[in-house]
Length: 251
Image (cartoon, rainbow, N blue to C red; front, side, top):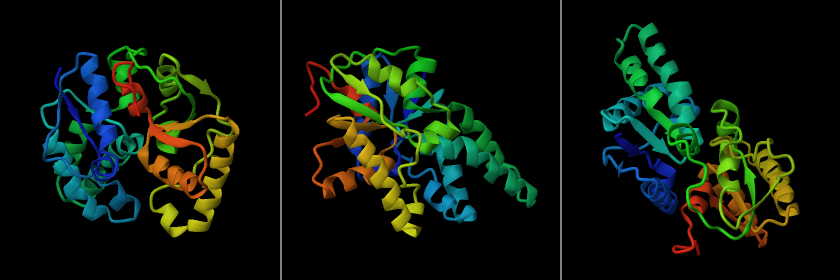
């Protein structure tokens, strides 16, 4: 089984610890993970802002970078949703415009091999207990892409519930958007901030010391709001919790 890590541009530039944690978890489970250096961005920021043509070279680059791998695993539901939901649209549009089927072929090649981390752990490896230890009270925020486009459902919670020492508490209004939404937060800052404030208020009401998620874009938004409030809660990607063990505790 050949497995590659897609770190994502956000994690590579801002949250490398999440990509490192993903590799730690997979290697602990006996998976050898490659990191193709040619990878960059999946094109989600460009596509979501309306620059379809500018996204096309990134689709081709992604397909080339991960060619030959059985699985491509990433700790980002939004990037997986970009590949699964929008790459076929990009390829189909190019075909409809009479520009050949290169993009469509690239999309068909990559889409079935792209997995979000919790999907891969449960659906492919058939694992819920990854040997983690994290003695803290945690609440989980399901991001919109993971919840609505990927249908991750209970997968993240099943993994968290199996972590030794972890107390998982329900987040009120968990299915409500946190307000980040990529460029939505830039174009509609007042609405985005209000939505984030609702999420933070609900999260703090749980008494959890950690707000966990599977997308660092959402956690960046919420973590910034928590820091500005000097709130007694931190944000962590689920990969980092799953990577924590008694021998290597997360500090």
